Image 1 (cartoon, rainbow, N blue to C red):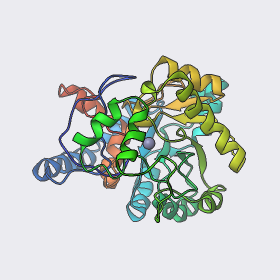
Image 2: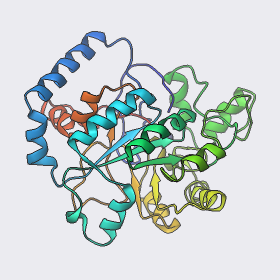
Image 3: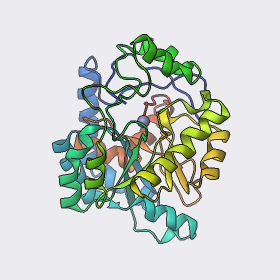
Image 4: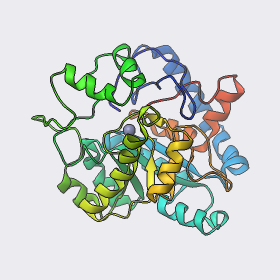
Length: 328
Ligand SMILES: [Zn+2]
């Protein structure tokens, strides 16, 4: 989601009741805390703790990163750092390996890069993706990309305004848009998402997958709405671009047993969440964990987080990995 600042709050697990925190860049009021965090990250990195941790705990576990709208120049530096520490593999290769029961044959230190929503600036990542030949999966909001429609949550000034909308039934987003004088399908002078041509240009280098049609909070949808969002997204992307859509990303990280069943029924082979953690060989392919990467995270932070070490330290310090969860 777009940048919104505000206080942290506890978030839910799968299909929970309260909305997650919408933030893709760090807030500006945490200067001292951010500096301390950076010092800790540098210390961990400098002391080779990350390397030792990786050898002991991540060698055979898949790390999946969750981006949204990373800065292209910063993304290039992050990719360089990640390539030095991980074997970046395609999500499709993981899905195939899981289906064939050969996950243990994947390269050591496997890592998958995913990006949610289909933000317009993602097109600027193409240069580094092509140059570095790095596999990347972008989960598209099929009803927004290729149009001048806006992501429904943009235009909301604060989380106080956003939360009720995300706690309301599916109509919440429509209600918000109506209050702004618009409708879900309204076209605006500027676009927020990738254009159809940009998607086609990126397609030889990028694995495009599904993220619903309009990015609702799925557990708040009726059965018919949820089915349309999950299966309809797959059909739209396949019909429009002839993509092979096999993977799904739950919007806002919100899902439950019904959403898993609908994803399976629609023909997806796997789905990703925003629950933090590494994925071992027994991971449920429809509940794959991801490491949330803020759009402005430095390369060091990305490497430490991708290794799973940061999550482990947070747990060790008594903070649940789900204690700070972000929106997607
Ligand atoms: Zn999203």
